[in-house]
Image 1 (cartoon, rainbow, N blue to C red):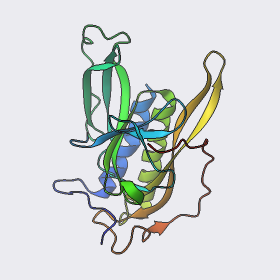
Image 2 (image 1 turned 30 degrees about the horizontal axis):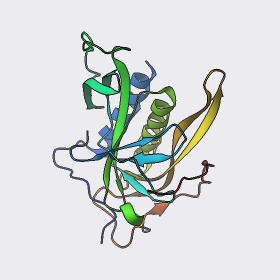
Image 3 (image 1 turned 90 degrees about the horizontal axis):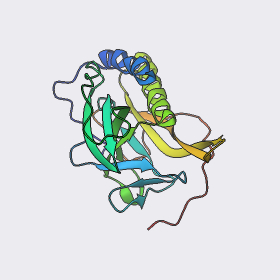
Image 4 (image 1 turned 180 degrees about the vertical axis):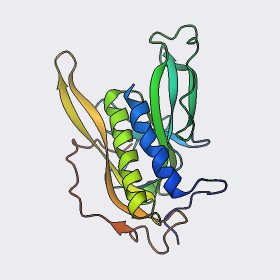
Length: 216
């Protein structure tokens, strides 16, 4: 049994990948076909899909290192009116005129794809995207850590992460939660033989997360 497999046809080398991921930092400061949308709700809990099913607290997720994307999204009254996203190997797309009805115009967005590798959601493919300052920061930090690791160990470029959250106090809106991706270890791109626990583990303390709601 393998932890996860990502298609690698026509993909660049992991050394090139590291350079591309670092490019996300500068861009962030200014897709997953068939995958569910994974997001963190306003209470700091991770949910996915149309039914907002809550993700298991201790589940591990394998991040596809070639799936990092950046670009723009335009929202209008709770609906996506337009989206221009490309892989980090490509320049950020030109904005152009925002779609009619986009209250905030084009917003900067970054994201990546991941697969659950443990628990009752094992095998679930998901996409995470962020436009908030905290969300973009979390994606960028993960990308930069991945780039550093690839430089040192190109044989295991797949980060195995846990999902949690942090928060800060906003003077007008109160407690604002931000996503946290804790790296628990690294896996080979073609998969690791054995159980989902067989990956190169890192000795890193888990961040504190808020109390978890009952799973639907």
